[in-house]
Amino acid sequence: MAPAGDGIYGRGATTLAAAAKLRDGPPAHVRLAVNAHRALHAAARRAAPAEACGLLAGTCVAGPRGTVAAVAAFVPLRNLAAGPAQFRCDPVEFARAHAALGRQGLQLLGFAHSHPTGPAALSAADREQLWRGCVQLVVAGGDGGGWHTTAWWGARDGGFRELPCAIGRAAGAAP
Image (cartoon, rainbow, N blue to C red; front, side):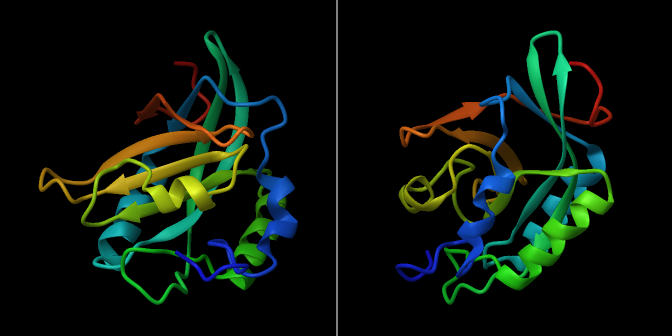
């Protein structure tokens, strides 16, 4: 992961941390639009054997089973980390991408990164360093069966829980 004090989202990026916080707590589930899913997996394949990283843009919508984090787009960001099994988002790209979201009528829902040779679960370093209060997607290709995506929510008390994640329907569609 990133050097101490630098953060995986880049030096100074934590000043934008509040922007990724979902106001009403964790969503009941995540709905990933097909185009966002494809973009995330394409970025993971291009970056391998290094980790890909980027932000998740969309909206929160009410669904019959609770709030849906409807991811409309994955915005890839340059990974500045030195090693292949870590990531650190470019803070300048992050700030530019975040500013563009508002102009597109989208909000920052969270982040995604890849584990090209590992499982689609959070690593110990992820659990220590990922932002809380936003969606975290992990896409992994290490099991030899193709790329697999999981969604996670980091509680403010430090724990993470996996969220149901559906792919394929329109981002705002009800489950």
